[in-house]
Length: 112
Length: 110
Image (tube, rainbow over all chains, first blue to last red; front, side):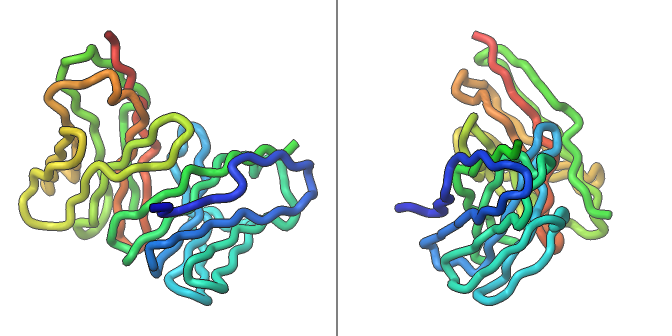
């Protein structure tokens, strides 16, 4: 009963490095989302996907790219990490946009 | 612009006391409304949701919420708080995508 799984759980990067965060869901959900959580700001949507092969920009997309090559996976990429991208990143999935979202446990990312 | 507001950043209540967490939304039409809870170091868990119909909705862990269209509010309530309820609570609304409030951290005094 895995639900939504995020890897890695923790990562420290240097400014300018690149990395990819992986999200996998086993609920056959069409919709997948990437959020970042910063103190006092709730969760802000970075990018989302409404199905395999699709992506769309959310509220704070700059500096991030995503891909949804397989229905169960949604990848978040940072091409050139900046200290402002230090945050906790959450992946979520849902059956439809107006249905409850299921969240992973988060990835804590620090950029020095 | 659509938005969700949680006016209380921190709330402290005594164990056994009642709780009400406030949430207001600003949307042209009634959105789909949710309350989520987040324990430290974990993801968000759905407490309850409102789509339509009965304006008082029941959720897990003894929580309930009341939708009031006239006040654009969806406040979360619990009659008697337990120490394990200490967490951060997020109100959220869907119009085109899900928007979250900034959260309310609940502390529970013994």
